[in-house]
Length: 157
Image (cartoon, rainbow, N blue to C red; front, side, top):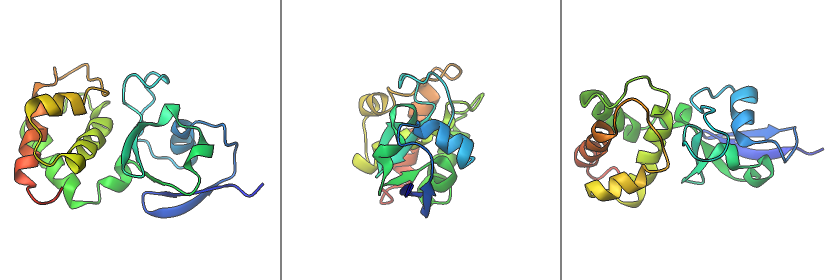
């Protein structure tokens, strides 16, 4: 067995397990990236969201065989960026975080949206975050935080 080679948060890694294993479990159990949460295991909640080659995906729906030669970014890697600092400040300033379970997925969904559309409207933000469920905040503070981050991070995305 040669293993599955990919980049995790900027570092090359090789996974020696099955190509049928879920990225979600591999990230949590093998690589200890605890920001990736297990919510529904059906791709409905967004708690397990990661960036795969810059595209937001639900890691519970991705087989390890599909990550060969690709780049996976979790919040552990993303939090080292200037973009994260802007989003983190905006989320904190507007109290867009409560229990925190959805926050890693929401932050990565925010990054995915802003990287494609640096100046989204409220409707576009709602659409961009629609795959991520939050049971605490009612979404309004999160939407305002993404809007604030877009404004304050002008030129970063």
